[in-house]
Image (cartoon, rainbow, N blue to C red; front, side, top):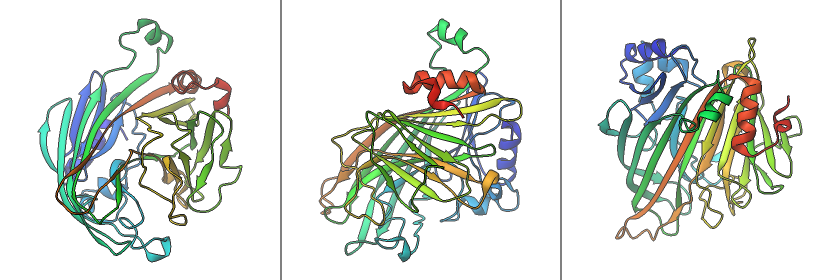
Length: 363
């Protein structure tokens, strides 16, 4: 779906999207949930992010956007750990929780112009593990559209002529003023990607890493682990979720689609700060002791080309006393770069940006 139709549909559904622009590119932010819902490298470009069709329906969109527990799509922010906040207990069998205070939350827009939007959510949400209790605090999201990263390098712009770009930066903070004692909390960033032609997630690593399975074991048909990277397939057919440890992550994760009928593809790169010394709050449901993964990727299931997959990362968490006296604060700044164009060109870009051999991206 192109930019104009996308925005028109959201507005017809009674929603109030904010469109950030730079040159020919646009980033569409949905204040309900503080999500980056659409990214367009040009007026004729398609949105590479998954968006639930219910959200774009004039009859259901507004209700859907305010309903907790539904999959909206786009780039969202959750809190970690998943167990205790988004599950009612330490294992999946306890059932999923979707606290409305966090998703979609009650975000208030404090700044909005053609390049930037800032949103703030004051929340109080339940925690369901280790005796329970409440978590309260403030989440702030500052989203800015980015100019082309090669704009000061004419030789690179010429080298990648014919490749379009859109990008954005998110500055986020979490201030916690109440939480159960000894609980570690972190910011959790997730992009839900459309998979009409499928593709692969690429995670550059410092060495051959230990890969964590969060659900069913991931076989060789979905996962490749090499000395300098991990490759993980997204096709929305079988459920798999993997994690990569903080000690091998480099601070980048990417998704490169397969070519469409015209040979065109999309490259999505997320750039973030990875801290090997940090405390990462999320853990697999079946391993409460944790593996300290800073990167995760999820392949949704049973939907195929109509479905989605995710690239995720966690910011280092904060451990609070739980006495409510001194706020604990964590901050993060990350960038997302999206390139569209002929797949061979995107392979060269991916190899350059991820510091991997072009052969890594061969199909």
